[in-house]
Every structure is written in structure tokens, then in C-alpha cells.
Image (cartoon, rainbow, N blue to C red; front, side, top):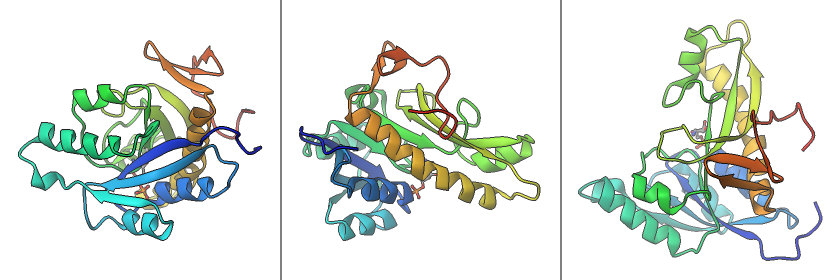
Amino acid sequence: MTESPVEPTRVVALISGRGSNLQALIDASSDRRFPARIVAVISNRADAAGLERARQAKIDTAVVDHKAFQDRTKFDQALLKTIDGYCPDLVVLAGFMRILSNDFVDHYAGRMLNIHPSLLPKFRGLHTHERALEAGESVSGASVHFVTSELDGGPVILQAQVPVQAGDTPDTLAARILEQEHRIYPLAVQWFATQRLELQAGKVLLDGLSLVTPPVFGNQEF
Ligand code: GRF
């Protein structure tokens, strides 16, 4: 990476918990050549451990507590206002455990990413590792995707594959997949920040070419 002559891409991260993916993004952006900066971390829970990671890195934090709002629409409006106060180019969901309304998702169309611990379209939603093991999958993994109104259903940008091992439990599989999450999320953010990535008519374009199948980290040169 050579140092970018333009202003780094402004990223707002939304979290609800531990924040290990957030940490991976913070670590990546501590390299001056990384083309994006996290300008704020926003959580719906005041006790999210990831907020402390942000404070350590001297990143602004905010809490928008969903329990303080009458309904999803009001919560989403307050969240949107807080996010937009930081003028982001990109919003990343990093373990953000709220379902977002269509208006919210539309507002950030083509500039909001999520990471999910399965090889989408398999195992959307919760308990992915349990379900992958129950289904007898020999390979699982993680996916970075654009966020659309369909839960975990947006177009996939990049995946990492992780072989399931004999004797794996949901926890052991989750841990190995998480290591890969920490590699692919910063890479996808880097692609976005260097304008290599675009969402057009519901399709992911990488370097101007529509992805027929999502690239697999480690299998291809990017
Ligand atoms: C990760 O497994 C991510 O894929 C999923 O939620 C988890 C968040 O973990 N969306 P962390 O808070 O980033 O450690």
C-alpha cells in the first residue's frame, strides 16, 4: 500500500458487543497507508466491550440505546442522525445486533457493509455455527456483504472458507472463522475506500466487473 494522496474514507462502525472485528479495522487503519479511518463507533448498548476498544484508540463513541425508543422507526431515526453527524462515506456493521428498517437501509444503500459468520447464502441469521455443524457441512466460513433490506441477504463481496474439523464444536468453529473475519473485513473496506467496489443494480462490481461468484480470500490474487 502506498500512502493515499486523498482524504481517507470516513467510516462509522456500529457494534453491540465484543468488537473484535472493530479491533481488526482499528488495527488496519492504524497503518497510515490504509485508505480509511474510523471516525466514530456507535453502539446500541452502553456496556458493549467494543466501546472501550474505540476509546483506547481515541475514536469518538456514542450510545443510542434502542430500549429508550418507542419503536424501531424512532430508534433508527435517532441512530441515523447520530451516524450522519459524522459525515461517513461508509457504515460498517460489526456485530450490530439490531434489525434495521427499510428506510434506514435505503439511506445507506451501497455504502453499508456487514460481516456474517457463514458462507452466505447459507445460514443467514443467528446460531450459524450450530446450524453448519448440524447440517454436516465440511466447509464453513464468513462473508462480507452489502446491506440490503433482506437480513444477511445483500450481495456478497468477499468470503473466507474454513474447513470443519472432526470434533468441532460451535465454539471451536466460531473461533477459527473469526480469525478469517478479521482478515476479510479490513480488505473489503480497503476495496471500498479505493473505489474498487461498487453496488450497482443489486450487483457487486469489483474493479468495474460484476462478480458472478464472490471471491474467496486466500484462493485468488486481488
Ligand atoms: C462476528 O462473528 C460477526 O460475523 C457477526 O457478529 C460477530 C461479532 O463479533 N456479525 P465481534 O463483536 O466483532 O467480536
